[in-house]
Every structure is written in structure tokens, then in C-alpha cells.
Image (cartoon, rainbow, N blue to C red):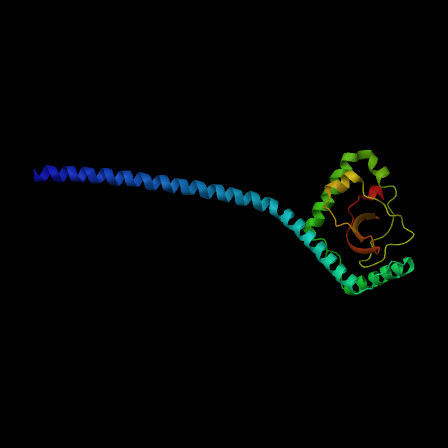
Length: 207
């Protein structure tokens, strides 16, 4: 009796161990599957994030410039007189140039954001095909601009085509995209200062 009872106990013990093993295996498989999904999600995020991160940084840098601009404006007296208003704008322009005297290309536009913007412009021009030259006919044929320089008073202010503009990162109201030569400028429209630019976004054949 003791021997049979012991046999049944051993069989029951084996069954219990087997059921536990199955449960452990199932949990391991579920964990591995979840880990695989997480890895795939991370890979997809890493594929998207560099551009998204750069564009976010671009917006943050623009906001930083506007904060600087607002702080400079507070230091200037406000007036409704047209003559004094013009003088105030000139004072603001001088203050901006002084505050950004060490500014260089790329300070406002991160390289990854510049690449994304250039790619958007190239794709738009390809869709326009033979109409590209007409769209950009008013773009001044000029050399690479200088950061902090005043936009030339005798140069045309060429507009970026509306459909192209809709596909570019949105700028705050006082800032503008302008084509200048083969380059895309970020211009402070109020003080007509070149804040930054992306070089050679337009093909030579259009210039």
C-alpha cells in the first residue's frame, strides 16, 4: 500500500511540475512577444524622431529669438508718431544686430531641419516641372547673404509659393521665408534683418 501510494504521489508530482512548466513557458513567450513589440515600436520611433526632434528644436530656437526680440523692445520707448516709430524700428534693428553679433548660419535652423526643409522644396519644384522657373522668376539673383545683414532695399522681396509654404514649418507672424539667390532666408520682416538661411536649396538651372 505504501509503495502504490508513493507511486501515485510521484505521478501527481510530475503532473504538477509539467503544468507549472507550461505556465512558465507561456509567460516567457508572452514577455518575449511584448519585448519584440516594444523593440519594433522603438525602431519605428527612432526612424521618425530625428526629423521631428529637429523641427521641434527649430521652433524652440525661433521662440528663443522672439523672446530676445521682446526683451529688446521693452527697452525702447513706445510711440504712435510715425517718425518716431520708424526710429524705434531702426533702434530695434540695431539692438538685434548687437545682441546677435556672434550669430552664424545654423544658429536658428538645425542641420536636420534644414535638410528636411530643402527636401520639401526640391519635391515641390519637381511636381511643378516646367513651371518652376516662372514661379521663381522674381527671386533676386544674388550671392550668399550675411547673417545679421539688412535685406537690400533695392532687392525684390520674392514670395514663397503658397502651396510650398503650406508644407514648410510654420513661422511666427513677424518672421518670413524668402528666396534670395539660390538660398532660403529666415527674415525678420519688421526690421528686415537676415536671421539665418539654408544655402543652395534651389537648383542652378533656375537661377
